[in-house]
Length: 102
Image 1: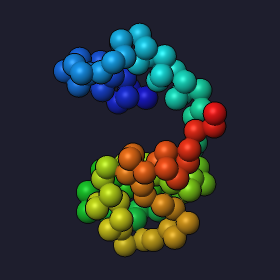
Image 2: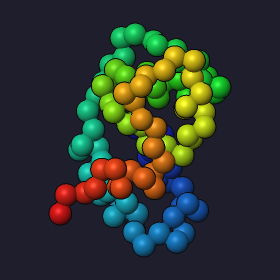
Image 3: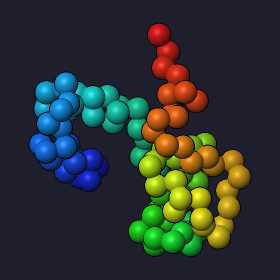
Image 4: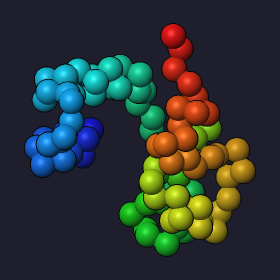
């Protein structure tokens, strides 16, 4: 989670944000509350163009996830090893596919 905390600490990213730093922290805490720890026992090595992205597919497969939400659509879709049940969605489409419950 240090990467998320690092991004949340970059004030320049949130200049136009309607949320205060405390409110962003509360949203992050809510996010963490919905997460679960997953251990990866097997390295699938999907051979993505950017080696640093391979772990995203490996974690999703280990967690039996149906979707990865990212803006990096092009790279994540170009792996040699395919997982047909795993969808890659941009953030803009996430709430369309998975609407929030009222």
